[in-house]
View 1: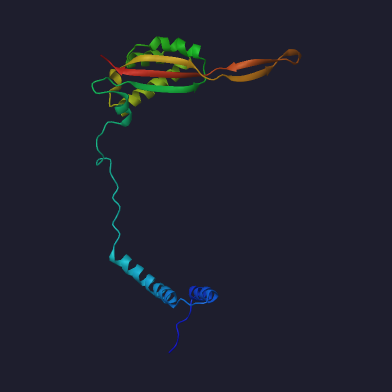
View 2 (view 1 turned 30 degrees about the vertical axis):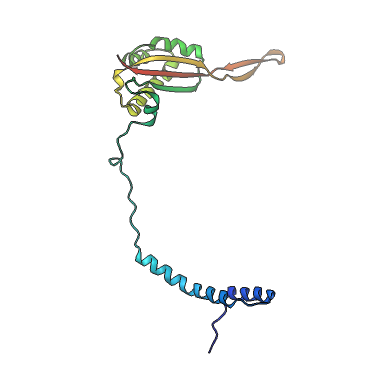
Length: 190
């Protein structure tokens, strides 16, 4: 009767057993049986269990819940407060305050008209921020943008970029490029 061919695992197991002085025949037989059975069993299991297609969730299936930001911002029965911030705007806070004083307390429609006709360059930044706040209100809080008013507007100082310019007789003078942080808070009209 011919002996089955030995694999590298079998040879390693015999060498280890020879060093110890005993041969573990049971281990050698088990490893040989596992090597011959594993591929056949794995193929049979794959054939028996067909893969199910993954179902993706559609937007229509999603539950209609209020966004997390809206839940955290207000208690039941309280009017929603919508905010928008613009940071590091390249204008001084003093110049930004000259424009924000015009729109404080106004409705969104009035503020848009005022900002559209204000000649200062920072009015464009305020207009962009106002549109962002209105979009936040419509998307996150399901409010109508035309029915909102500006409750607070602030222009705070941001970091100042320091630059230097050469001057006469080897001197240098500082140039301060100021920045500001703009913020708008909207609430529904009463």
